[in-house]
View 1: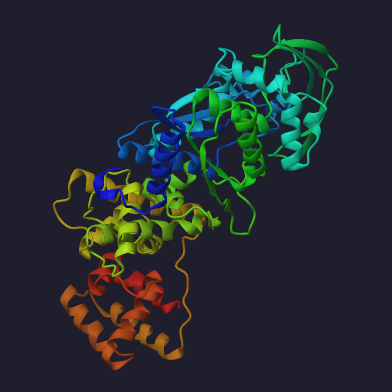
View 2 (view 1 turned 60 degrees about the vertical axis):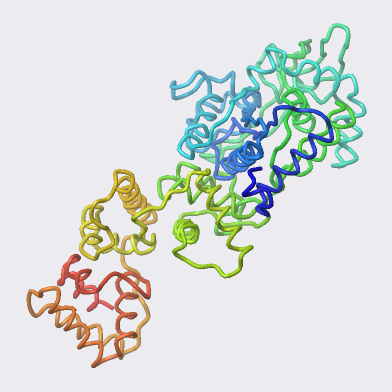
Length: 532
């Protein structure tokens, strides 16, 4: 860790420090590796991106200590398809049970369904500036990367089964091997039962005798999948390890030192930790436990459940920095992820920038150090001060009134929110902010100004302003003077301005009122105020 941050209490720095100290004591791993697993059988959701961002910043923190570090993303495209993913065609129903790397991409833009789905998350990571070394199960198994681990686990399959039963209560792997062969006859992987392993020949005997319930998430159609009845033999590269032992094999084979995990796979991680140590003789990587994201109704975000909020969705309404903030601010809090949550994260990212560059003061030194370090990670160690930082809720509400990016831009210029002589980067940032707000308003369906609750005195004051606006074409300075006169004669200056801003943009503060009204159009504003 660099000298300036060697005493940092930020969670990422603390984990990096512990990893370095631990690996030094274990006398292993000159190159430290962080990892994330990428599911390849369903549409990636926001939580999938979170795994990658957390592991990536720990990788950055390790480099910051002076260590050599790599970030590995492992896509499990040897996994079988259980459900037709949301938005995918019904033609995939007949492919359920087969490894996604062996299913043709229905859109014909990739070699396989697995590659198509993996690319969705990879593309999001590109937008988030997350760099990784991509490994594919469909490549690593056939080329023998996991041969030693598979053999050791299958030789000690009984012990693996006992570990799994002790941790989960599941006795399945006391009755069969923790390996899923790909049936040579029907091509399915979830319908097979491996029951005998010959360590000398490295051959596995199996039956294709299992059934399971698949589904088309798009239609709700349940699909019963049954094994073809074939009995055969396969090699250790012709299938994959069961989930409750596969992480362990991956961790040792790729020498992984850190991987975060969520509440939904807690038991699997515990099983793999034990298998890694007790069967493979490798101390499992250090972990971070994080809570899951939920939708506003309280249901977990799930790619199989159909309520998928994807990384690309977030990035069409908000900046990469706001999304990185979502994952990095804290780990052990369940948070709501939906369109309504986005404005707060955009504003919080802006506040972090103001704190970092001294525009907002924080009295507590530890809290200030924490927030500054969070800002550095949110910007991946490349913070810059923007000249354009317009509150996201204000942008949304102006967009509702004037309806398009160009008009909003003109309004902001007239009210002084867009300074002259912007750099190319600031121009790009401003254009993206306007695009985010435009997309948010359009896709939420909240295109109308939300009426505020007003008492009779407040309504009378606003109608008086509306009446004055209709009287004539105003010059800016004349209108500003008239507004102040109306304020003094009705609600008082502070209360009057607060009520006007709440009525127009649902905020207690806003741009200088006269130029704001004139840029929107005095008649349009009058109509809005009269309708309250």
